[in-house]
Image (cartoon, rainbow, N blue to C red; front, side, top):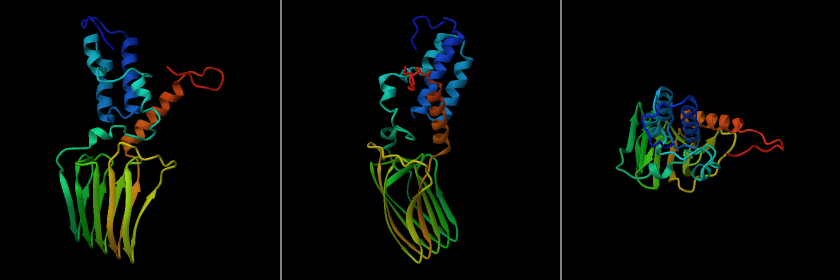
Length: 232
């Protein structure tokens, strides 16, 4: 949306067009859910063009070529390049008769080592950033357990050993997406002695809401009458 007169009063139709741009942006992964909700709230409170324009200045118009470039990446955050780089906030974790947790927004170092004995640990990569594109996560547990949760489209290779225990990957997704070509490459190694290390592909709550919004937008497309959905 552009305007030569920022003081022009905004109409209901203009606010709705901005809201539609925001809905497509969150469905494509261009906006995080909390930012989407903030912008959407500001949209319906806006009174002038000058208040509306900044809300979509950094977003493509719905149905444009930029939006089409990521339309086929179902379940993807579609922002991997922005999540690679920066100083690591953690390079390891340790638990003895207790537990540890690494989740939310944190930056994984190129080598991350986790150890748990008579305890457990949680490593969640769904909202994590990565110091480098290639990351090695080493998990060691003795009479304990460790859970690694990864987003569906992350490149992950699991190569660990379980002795009187288990070390492996599983998924509860109905559909397994292809790893994103620009996603980090994560190799998970280590061993579990009389314990277990599990690696699970799972969508975050924000990703699930994003997919629901994407499906809602798809169903809103008018039908052309020949069984196809009209684009644009």
